[in-house]
Length: 311
Image (cartoon, one colour):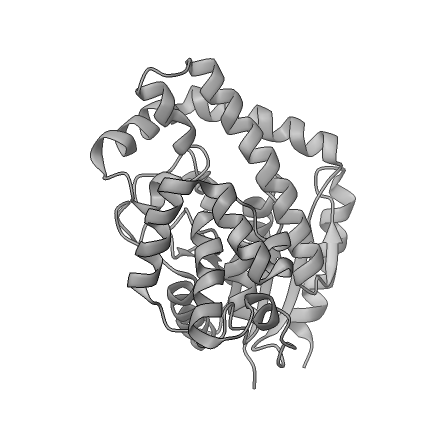
């Protein structure tokens, strides 16, 4: 039998952490982090990690498991989260996956390849990274557009690593990256109830701006400075929103206000991309707006109960 799980997805600042804890309390559950940045130690404020007080004694897994200069991939997450689901289920508890990293969640729930069976070709990647430094991100994106227009449409030009990966898949397999992405999904790997959180776009953006201001008051700048000064520039963690925007400030190239404004802008842009991903790429069982009112919380709790108690 497939393990029974609950999954909570959605953009930043819509209440995923709180709902995860409420569901865990109600159904004897434990939370598994599904956010790519919360795996890093020391990055607490900018990633909005759950605090000890907020957790209320509920166990949270896959948080603080990597140093900021270590890498962590989709396949790493899939392996680790699948193992945690087995362990939590074996204890007679309910695994609850909470996060906004769409690629992580989709890879966990479905047997999708995200690039087929193309093995990493480090020499190929290095060659294109050097090419991009010389010619620029737009030129790199145009290379993909010529070879795989559909993939180019789906991947932002600034996502250099993803663009190169798409080119790598074409090089290694002879097939387009978009063809792999369009592969029909196999049967879901778990008996899952997927909850999508969202709210009015204007309200969401206001909440994101307010959250960044709160993070600044809590010490985000100091956290970003520690990351900037302690770890090398190509560390995966330094590319996260809420940290990379301060690099130019630390180099005295921009003002602090400009960097903060950039964090807000990038966070809003990311929230929009998250919503697009979850709506287009995943099967959401129930969309909920917890920001709008508590009645929706009661509704989703009842739906979750029906899932938990179903055979």
